[in-house]
Length: 413
Figure 1 (tube, rainbow, N blue to C red):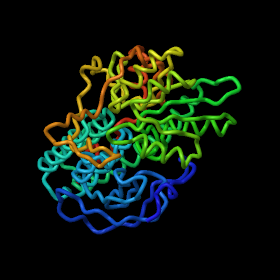
Figure 2 (figure 1 turned 120 degrees about the vertical axis):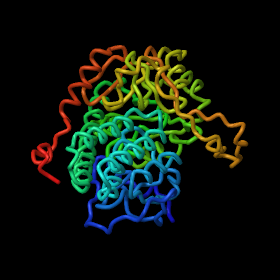
Figure 3 (figure 1 turned 30 degrees about the horizontal axis):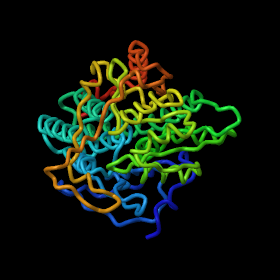
């Protein structure tokens, strides 16, 4: 099969999640969902949804192959989270919402108590698959709250339909929110006088981690569309190689000039090149402004703060739901440990013995090293807990858990 790079659309803002006709009911859950064959269809989003399943673009195989994995229920989604086929808080939040909706469909003939218990179990499996993602936990909490708000006598098909409708609405919200974040980030990024904007990217803050619109990379594309010039430096982002494999793939298809560098070369880069900004994605923002993110973010941000040419501003682009006012500081952000087998060296193919691998999946950037946090609700200094909290409350007020009048009154049975 030809490289999947050629299949990615140039404009990350185009396209919609595909919807097709109803399909037969799904079979019983499997511990490892069956894969579907590679497809030559162009990908406008890292997943697409039909009436009975999620078709997930397997990020483990990119950019060499664009294979789909089929998820018919939340337990399937949790499995692919665990093995790294999907990553990024905003993306995982959307997938979790759909996964729980499909699980509710499978449970439609169960008793209300049994259905509630199973949705709780599946939700916990989703959260435990990637503990460092606040957006994932937010999505599961919302689905639980919606199901719990329904009268006890609500029939299972109605529960599933309402969860699916809410998942659709949240995915549409995400597309709009991420586009707003991209515009805000483009506005606050430095504007070098008569030269190219040079940015350093760690991980993949693009559409593959966010859904249809990747805020950080779309911001760079917007700057170019407005007549600016951009050059991106991308860390390999070991051990998952999110930068070398995924961010570089997206940047190439956005036609943005970029170069990949070893993680260990960040210090040398900052000494030799005039880097104007560092772009990071945030997975969990604590009340004091500490930011949890992909492992290696702390080292990159620390080097930027102490660069010999002067501090380089670090921008974190993230939905406001990433902010958690109940998490006091970075020490309280959940730790995410990944399997030691992930430490395979991508150059030699050598694997470390399992007992010798310590593979932390996330780390914490102190608030003092972050210049600005850019959200759909505005741009904030990391220490502005009051502003972030008020923005979170305002955003949540715009997406209340609304039930149809007949359901809220117990009229659907």
